[in-house]
Image 1 (cartoon, helix red, strand yellow):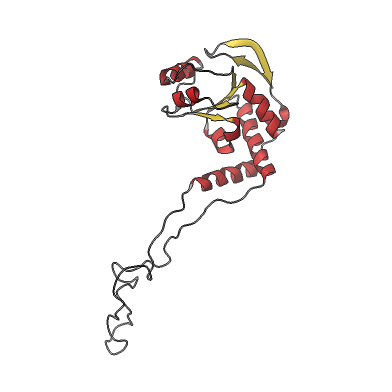
Image 2 (cartoon, one colour):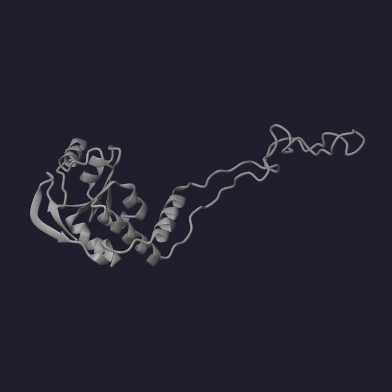
Length: 208
């Protein structure tokens, strides 16, 4: 697949980029995508939830009533889970939800996601972007020129650019990442993928 490179104003230039079919034209592996997205979302969970069980609740350990002769069920202390203010039975404990995935599987998932975006014609190649200062209105204008103001976009840069990143940070639906930060969830969560000209070669080198 060959795509024209557009400039900052959204106009096509004379340059063209040919996308490597080994990265942008593979048969998507849906199960690999599922596992990679599942791992990403699992890693976002803090896992700090915790409830006090019977042994952790503050209260007297005195037996409420004698074991036999009352006509009722046996009862221990006031920290019983059956009583209000007592401990919780099998309550949530701190937990790490993340799990391991092989590097090759993650690469397969990323190639699959990029191929799906390419198949939907949702990839735009832009000239390497530079902002002189941090201005949100400049990034808004950039998206407007590309006719993507109402779309969820993911701009992938080859290297971190503070001005571009901070200019986009306050915009809902607009995200800027570097090639090293690119992940399957981020690709599929966007309506349009904006790749800087220099980022394409780096992506192809890391995934081919």
